[in-house]
Length: 457
Image (cartoon, rainbow, N blue to C red; front, side, top):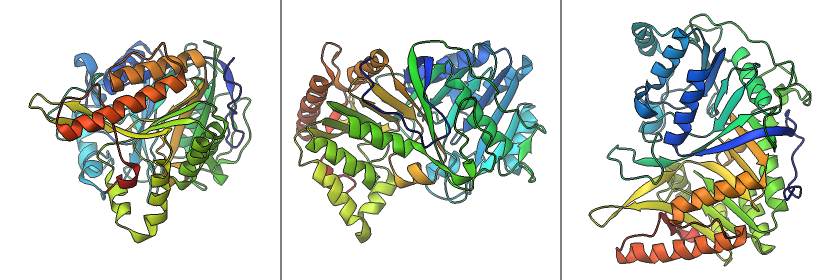
């Protein structure tokens, strides 16, 4: 009820599945606390896809590192598997230092630890296997999945409110979603498909602890709630050849690729009637910007939260003459009174501000539908990187998520406001905070308005 106007998509392998429990998890401390609880209560298995990781990343409440959590699960007799992205060491220092490539030094480190979880490495030439997912007790009663964008970084495992951190990479905003019910079968299926065809599985240093292939799920998990959920993906053509469909899903040949995340974004934006709220590391897709412009022309309120200090790729693109038409597109959004481009920052004790990096990949529309996942709004996220999102139709959960996010970003409870009123209030607070930043006075909440015509300069 209240969400039927936002359509699902049929271009991917996974259908809309009814009967799911859905719980958004905002910020890394809350998300990884819940994930670790699920791993600790697992009876059969715990499987994870990893993109970026700090080897010493600390899980909440004194649980130790990510590797400590996996090792303890193995000691309990759980089938533990990690699928790592194999990355060539190039790019920004942050990327280089947080890729666990399974090289000789890293394998010696695993051996010294006595780590006995299973691992495979998967390579995506020139691009990233960017999925961040967990499947707990796959195929068993109580199967639970987590889908989102939070990297296993120390600056990502942070508390709500984002107090100042002396960590050199600062503090990062990000989101996961917990799923139970039929949609977990599709996260399970995605893991098996990638695990069985991981590119490095037959290469030296391509596996750890001699892991075996996995069977595909043959039945859908039992209902666990009231939300409708659809799992969507980006998988480039040719990455995998196995076409085994999920139970009740479409027999799409994965060899042809999967672009259902972009299709879902377009369908949802085009169906919006009142308000679109997006948090994303990037505003880098001409197609999405064009559809947002059309929504603004229809009178839809649009708020787009991005890093106040843009990703280096955005700044580099600004200097390229060929990118000028796209940045004119972004500037065009700012000509609409119903559009806000914003960043977030916290007050410092010395009177200054500390930037909070927006790494979330979420969208909320009309307090009715939301998507949470790993996908940046950029061409590579929609076409070349390997991504995973979970979209859900459940107004109660979407509204609660909107209220939680705005409580943090605005320092106000917007639970009594409808979605359009909340976006208008977002603009008022952010614009006032932009003036406060110019005057050097403390911000209310975290959000401050950015100039779309100057973003990335």
